[in-house]
Image (cartoon, rainbow over all chains, first blue to last red; front, side, top):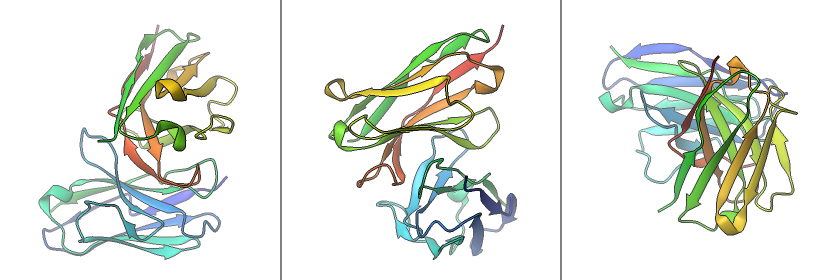
Length: 107
Length: 121
C-alpha cells in the first residue's frame, strides 16, 4: 500500500505569509494527488486535483505542484479564513490513502 | 446543485450492525464512482471503500474488509454501506463522497455532511 506523509504536522504563520505544506508518497503516483481543506467542524473540501489543478471556486492564492512522489501545497498570502487542517490524498490506486493532515493556525 | 445526504448513523453495540445510506442529487448518479471516508473524533481522514459507477467494482480498506459491504442502487440514486461486526475503532463520522469524472481513480469533488456512528455497550 502507498503511504502518504505530510510535513509539517502543524504550523503557525502570520496573515500575509507564504505557507508551504509538503506531501510525500512512498512510491510514485504520477500526478494522482489531491489536496483537501477541512475547516474546524466542517466537511472536507477539495482544493486541488491532479497535483496542480485548482478546483472551481477555490481562491487563486492556493496552488499545487509536484509529480511522482513529492508534492507541495502553497498558500501565497495567508488569510484568516485559511485556518484549517489540510490533507493530501493518493488516488492512483486503492487504498486511496490520505496523509495524516497539517493543522494550520494564525500566529 | 450536487448534493449528498447521509443517514443511518447511530449508537450500536460492539458486534452489531448498521446500514448507512447516502442520497445523491444534482448529477447523473450512475456515471460516477462513489466512496465512503470516515473520521474518528479528533483524528484524520481514513478512506473506507469505493464502488464504480456500475457497481461491479469495489474496493475496501484492510481495516473493514470482510465486515463492510458497499453497494449502490442507481435508479434510486443511493449509495449504501452495510457495516457488520462493528468494533469500537469503527466509531467515526462517515462521509460519502462523489468522485470526479473518469472512473474510480479520481479525486473526491463533493462530500456529504456526514453521519455519526458510535460503537459502545
